[in-house]
Length: 178
Image 1 (cartoon, rainbow, N blue to C red):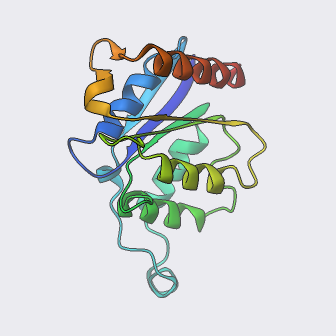
Image 2: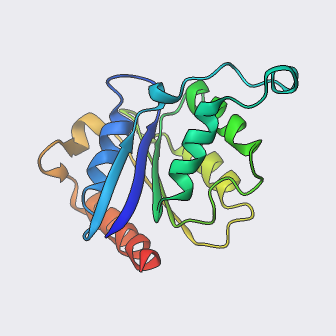
């Protein structure tokens, strides 16, 4: 059974991205999805001075260990002013100080959603560009626009074209897990 780590890159308790990441992770057959909450990994804002004086927080090591033990990673990005949320960026900054290979070349499925027409596609492109750097595995990406109109907690994606697109990305992601 494959261990899939999934999380919404947001600290909102009502995050539609966490909901979306969880939904997608639970669609993967023969897997054990582990859904993370970034609030469980809240750390001081990264700075070189803080790292020099206090070291890397233990929560950064904990997060990194979870990633290392995964077979695949699913992240759904919230878009804050066209970029990552501060909560995600801070965790990313801290874990990148532990080892240069942040995501361990694990198969990845990057998602993004919002209630807007673009579906947080700006942050998805930023994330894809950064995470594909030095990653030997193919990274799949999918953006879901107008979350409230296109998603149902039980039925999933309502638009047939978007649903088919995600299913194709899931198929490719699952093939990398084998």
